[in-house]
Structure formats: structure tokens, C-alpha cells
Length: 534
Ligand code: FAD
Ligand code: NAP
Image 1 (tube, rainbow, N blue to C red):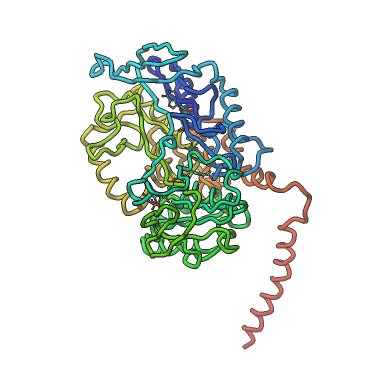
Image 2 (cartoon, protein in one colour; image 1 turned 180 degrees about the vertical axis):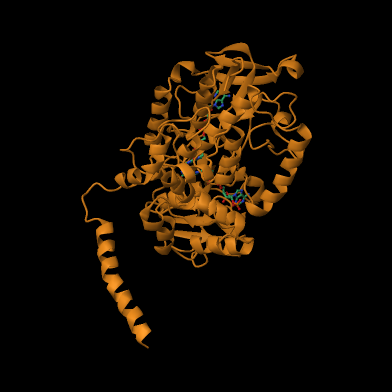
């Protein structure tokens, strides 16, 4: 495919999304500059001892909750020697390797903050943006043909103090989990954590080892999954498959809900552990935690309902129960978005909610020259999602792909908003079905795997693509930016996963099962013969 004239594109942020955007923009032949306010790539994954203004902040013990085969960029597998789920320091290392491999570092202007992004005076005709950056106290204005916004969405804490009467009288310490870094400060303390998302569950389990007591309050419950799923494989390699997504689409909703509930309750009953979601069929993001159930059953974490009010030293819950002498309250109540350098009306609708076509394009702009990468939250890892979004966005900016009319986009967004309220429950993040979303975007840019063709030409690969994990490599099997290593990466994904956990020679599982099967066949034959004789 011949590429149109190169554009001058600004990428804001050099986290997972910014690196994907930069790489895809350069790959498509554009002059691209990436602005990053910190001095390194990796965004959220760069741990710091204290939360920094305008940047995401994580605690020291964060591990990825998507496994290495699902959390990599589609043309750059995570090194064999990395574990399946990675500590933040290791995942940051992978992001650096990616930046080096594709020679991205020299296009990044570090310690440079974007302070304003405004439509140029001739925007209606040209779609250009005036971008003001600040470095060493000096401001500079540059005009770009397009802007890719990659500034993350776990930066600005959602601290809903207005929902907690009496918190102003509370004499202990309270804070958002953005400021939580490690457990040492909480040794011997009585800690109440509000919010059962991944942060709340992680922090509760971590503090349970050293705090005097930990209470975890949840207003609507959550499904809690283990990273270690069937036969010890990562949950996402087993669950995030095209086959599963197909079943979700064709099965009647009631049956699909029943199967989902059954799957979630396989390890322990969420009812018995007080965790069950108020809306059981809600597909809001589950919590991934291998320790929480053990903490609950060992009594080191106690699950409570929502807090009705605080007194000077106690929390009174909605069921009337009271916890006295609380030392610390940690609000693990999630995040809200903000783009302080941009006019809000560009990304928000008239209900003041971020509203983007396919989670990427503001629908009402005169020209489609601004795209948001990495905002959509799906069950899959962010790197492949950001990669496919960025490729599509660059194609639209270059005029290779066209967006529907403004009216069509707005109508679709309104319809989606209503649907998601039922399907994904109450959540501040934009959520969507991973496989369906990836397929839709990849179909726009001609890289959606063609299953029928694969079945005829490469059945072994087709089997893995349909029944195996819907891994990132699937989206670089074909199309203009295809990666030649994709087929091999798909066929070897299970081997790499096992290699990451087995460091000792063990008798092979298949040998045993083979012997069992061999013993089983005569037994079956005998039963069959006996039945014939009757
Ligand atoms: P960020 O990582 O936040 O990067 C944004 C970058 O933009 C930063 O480097 C920032 O400095 C820069 N920036 C911001 N504003 C400006 C500006 N004005 N000018 C210049 N630069 C700017 N997702 C997963 O897929 N798997 C996981 O396991 C996972 N674990 C998570 C754990 C935690 C604790 C949290 C909070 C989130 C987790 N997420 C996970 C979601 C997470 O948001 C993504 O993994 C990912 O980090 C998002 O990348 P990003 O590039 O969009 O944003
Ligand atoms: P989150 O998923 O948004 O969860 C916030 C929690 O706070 C929810 O349980 C929510 O309850 C509750 N809440 C919000 N407002 C409330 C209110 N007014 N009153 C009572 N409860 C309230 O936030 P998060 O846990 O910080 O996670 C953010 C993102 O980071 C997620 O995508 C997550 O996967 C990721 N993360 C990953 C890891 C990891 O292990 N890799 C660790 C931490 C976070 P409702 O459910 O009722 O809305």
C-alpha cells in the first residue's frame, strides 16, 4: 500500500501507550516527536518513593495482572527468562528494551511537559494543533498536523469524601492509595481500606501481614480471580480466547451469566467470603488476587459493607456494625481522567463524561487529527490494545481510513453508553470486551486474522488462533505492518509459559496420562463387552 505524504505528529507521554503511538507513527513514515514530562520511558511502571504531580504512582509490590504472552507489544515478545507475571521493575525493563529495539529514544524529548494543546487558527481546513511545551522553565510553541494523547488515566485520584459523612471529624490519617508505597509505616496499625478494586485487594493482602488488623470495605463486591488459573496456566491465556468470546456472543445471556458465575466460584464461594458482586452478571473488571481469599479465611482481612459514616475514631458501616480505634483509612477508590492542557469540551460530551468514538477519536472535531491512546480499559493487557489503536489512529490521520459522519459517531456512542451500564456495571473506567474490540479495530486496518483462510492454509495455526489465547501476535500476522515472527510466537506461546515456571526436570505429565489412558482402554473394552453380553 502506498503511503500518503508524511505528517508532523506529536505524541504526548512515553508510557506504554506513548511508546506504541510513537513506534506506529514512525513506522507509517511520519515525522514524530514525543514529549515526556519525566526523565524516562515507562510512565506508571516507573516506581518512585513519592507520588509525583501529574504522573501515575504505584506501590512497590505491583505485579502485572496480565501475563507476559498477553501483555507484550505484538511484534516484540517479552524475553523468555522473564516470569509469566512481572514485577513492575521487570516490566519497566521490558518497556526500555522495546524503546531501544525500535530506536525510539532519540525521538523523545524528556523533561518536557505539554502545557497546552489548542486548535490552530486554520484548524477547520488543516486540522493542525498548536502545542505549547515547557522545558527548564522555557515555553515553546510548535504546530503539528496531529496529536496522539497518551498521558494515562490512573493519575488523578478519585477521592469521594462527600460520600463519607464525618470524615472531616476523623482524627486518624486518611489518604488515597496513590500515596501508599509500602507496608512498613502501617505495622501494628488498624487499617480500613475502602474499595475492592485491584489496588484495594493488593494493599489489604499486603498489610494483613504486618498491620494489627485490616478491614476491606466494598459497596458492591467484586469477583476475585487468581492469576494462576486452570492447570496453573495464567488466567488470561485460558480465558481470553476467541472461542470463549464466541460463546459469550452466541449463548443466551442467562446461560452465559451462569457459566461466568460458576467459573468465578470455582476456587471459593464468593458468597461465603462476603465478596459476591451486588450485580452478579456484571462484567466489570474482576480483581486479580491470589492471596485475598487466604487472608479472609485466616482472619487477617475482614470484608465489610460500605461505610455509612465516620466518627472521630470509628467507622460505622451500612449494616450498623462498627469498627473502633481505626488508625488509617486508605481510599482505594480508583481514578478519574483529566487532560489539563486541553479544552474539556473536546473529549467530553454534554454529560461531562469522556466520550470517544471506539474509545479513541473525539466525535465532534472538524478534522480527525486528535486521538486518545490507551484510555479504553479491557480485560487484556494495554500494550496490544495501544498498538492497534495507534495503528488505526495513524491510518485515519493519514487519510487511509475514514471515520463515519459526526452524527453516526455520536449516535453510536449514545447507544453504547446505555448498553455498557448493564453489561459492565458501575465503573469509572471505559470498559469493553477485549477480543471483540481488538477484532473491530484490526478489521479497520486490515490486520484481523482471517480464520477461514487460516483453517484452509495453516490449520495448526488456525487451531491456536481460535482455541488458544487471543495473544497480541495475532494482530501482526497480516496487514501492512505484519511481523514475520508472529506465527512462530503463537505456536511457541505455551512452551514459553511453561519455561517460565519449570526450572527442574520432572517426569512428564503426558507420560503419566499416556499410561493411564493405556490402562483405561482395556477397562473400557471390558465394560463394553460385558454390556454386549447382557
Ligand atoms: P502512563 O503509564 O500513565 O503514562 C503516561 C505518561 O505520560 C507518563 O510517562 C507521564 O509522565 C506522561 N505525561 C503525562 N502528562 C504529560 C504532559 N502534560 N506532558 C508530557 N508528558 C506527560 N494495565 C495492564 O495492562 N496490566 C497491568 O498489569 C496493569 N497493572 C496496573 C497496576 C496499577 C497499580 C495501575 C494503577 C494500573 C495498571 N494497569 C495495568 C493500567 C495502566 O494504566 C497501564 O498498564 C499503563 O501503564 C497505561 O499506560 P499509559 O502509557 O497509557 O499511561
Ligand atoms: P478501580 O478498579 O476503579 O476500583 C475502585 C474501587 O473503589 C471499586 O471497588 C469501587 O467500587 C470503589 N469506589 C469508588 N468510588 C466509591 C465510593 N464513592 N464509595 C465506595 N466505594 C467506591 O481502582 P483501582 O483498584 O485503583 O484500579 C485501577 C486500575 O489499575 C484497574 O484497571 C486495575 O486493574 C489496575 N490495577 C492493577 C493492579 C495489578 O495488580 N497489576 C493493581 C492495582 C490496580 P464499585 O465497584 O462499587 O464502583
